[in-house]
Length: 138
Image (cartoon, rainbow, N blue to C red; front, side, top):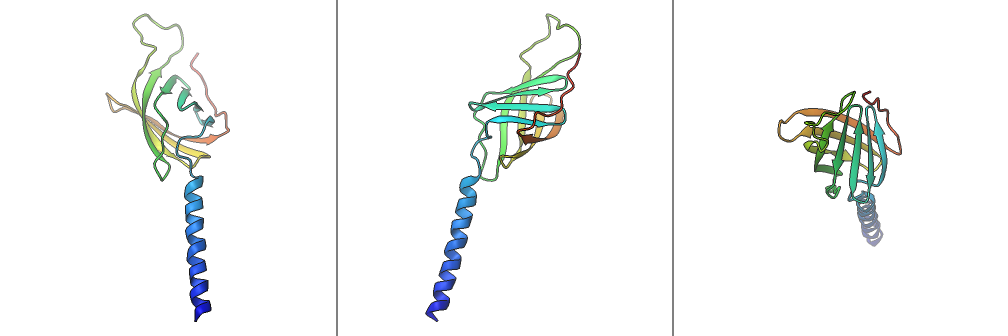
């Protein structure tokens, strides 16, 4: 009887340690590095991110915090680009955008939405360590 109680306690303890260890390995912020996917590249450094799309750029200056499930909702800017010269009335600063999604520290799913117009820019799948494939406007 004591052996069964001991074995049951041991199994519960090992399971608890495994769960706590798995939670401890999950990043609390989006990890630094280059993240790439089709038509996008994000460079994360020092708690901020710069984003390059085919015909746009973006910035996230706020801390890149994740919840306990790896989800995030971040505020930044999105600036559309086009071929040819930039006109005086065009703003290079961009407009407010929301960057939301999920990451496990290796893969990321990102949705970009313009804040004021609620325009969906797109959803992207990225991999940490990948340069991505971007075709810049010319």
